[in-house]
Length: 496
Image 1 (spheres, rainbow, N blue to C red):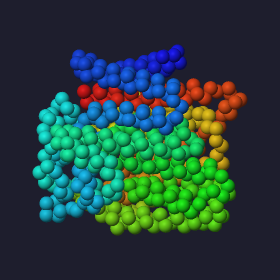
Image 2: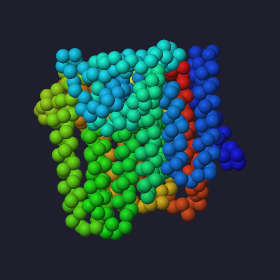
Image 3: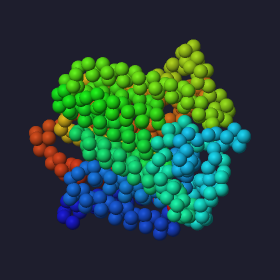
């Protein structure tokens, strides 16, 4: 190992110890064996990544290795069904493994037909705290009250493959969870790597976002956000490809492909339909015919129509075929009533206008990875500072027009405000004056993070500043794995 790699590796190890001091409590120190083993694994993985990054300059390969290696730790270390909404995602993945595209809610039995093993997973426990993991898969037909009926089936194909293999190999039932997570992780890592490879610009910002600790943990769970986040990155990569294409080279096929990608993503979270607006930032000269810009505008409205129809006639109604239906009744959730409240009550408008005040809470929960565990606030704020500095000062070679920056801002603003607005209508109690009641999670906003450097970057002139871009990239990669390692340390302190 040369001096440069020694330096980066030493910084990585010191950072892990810092996070260990921040996280570990008395219980961790008096019984430290599990934590020591995890720290050793983190050291080995850090060594592999830093050594590989020193040899291979293909960022998409490095991204895949980082995501898979650190993701594997989340696959096996994360407590059972601890990740956001994982119990329900597990049930839907199992139903998908039966080749069922649209699950049917059985009114008489009050749920969806699945198998016994996925309905008995102990929540928030690890393998040392239960014997559930040692039992064989229970294929007894069983009903479960919720299965994310509102989500499209393709979001569960990857984990369903894992569950199918676990059944075919007659493994213990814990492998339903682990194999499902693993195949979701492979899917997430593969799509992110493809996005980084295909994008002609902004590769390092895309790498940083793909390897965001929250994103990698979601990718290593059964959450459908693995698909949402990775395909959002692919949509933005495709936009970059059209943006940097030659004059008169963007065809109808390119436009159609872009809108199909956005539609696939937006059917998982409707506000991500705003990504379609990015096509308006593509220089008009890049379109094969000028009239294609009008075709793009028609495509935006067509996409909006499809999403509204999907949401109104299928998505919202499907929510009631789950535990949410009872919750909505108990909390007085009423979308139409909430809309009437906004139209006739200035207080409601004032509440929504305060959406910007939610940014600190969004940042503080940047590492809220488990439903019933708190966020790692120290890591969240350190990461936020790192990402802001990176967005401002990382030397991006490509120059983007003011028009592209404005449209990118509109996209980010639309996703941020639109998410709060929709959640205000469909989740918050009638007449609430607290946007915290909207049930917003920071993960909803990760899909637009790779546009932030585009908007904020001050375009440092690399030649004038004599910046060694290779060393800078290694420093960024080291920071990325430091934050991932820090989150794994936090998981160790929580669950072990």
